[in-house]
Amino acid sequence: MHRFILGLLRVVLLASLALAGTAHAAGPLSELKLFKSTPMGQGLWRMELISSDDPQMARGAAAMGQTGLCMDVAKQMSRNTPADDPRCTPQVLRNTESQAEIEVSCKDGGSSRMLMTRESEKSYLMDTTVSKDGKQRHFKVRYTHAGACKGDAMMQFDKNSPMCKQMDPAKMLARCASLPESSRAQCEQQMKGLAAACQ
Image (tube, rainbow, N blue to C red; front, side, top):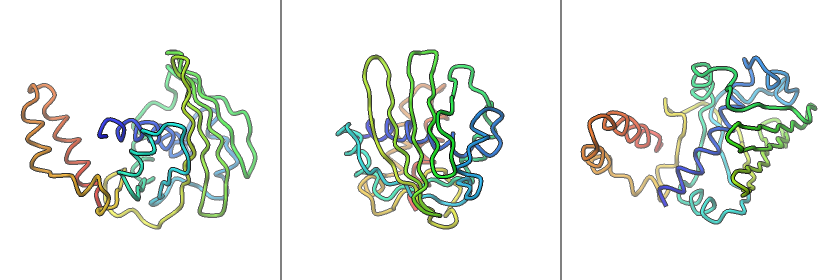
């Protein structure tokens, strides 16, 4: 289950970092009309997996419970990464005040297509298809503004979710201690970040 949760987080985070970075991106993402009147780059946004053709992704989302993304932290992270990733090229296919469609093609053969629709002033729907190695995954995620961030973690989970209830910080750090020294510090940092994300 842990592996599936990390996989879901990776896909959703990549999309979210792209959204957070639109405000200062140098490429075509900086021109999205969808976020001109209602920027998505501030505060806490709840993420809800509406549908997925991957049952493992659905189980992972259920285990995470109410998940929030602190866009203030995501925005800061996107500032610390290169504006243009040479491995992937985004192309804007649709650009209106109510919808944006983006296709991202990567040199490793993977690609993704995102259709983002404004549902209301505080709600966006992201319909995403990810393709790689001849396989496709499709999922829809709703982002709803939930006020100010509750901490410094980018991902913020419901403390009563199955995932947070199973977390034991001492056991998590003990697992890191068994790793080679070169990987230990990074593991400890990730485990502390996960524990801090349970709000």
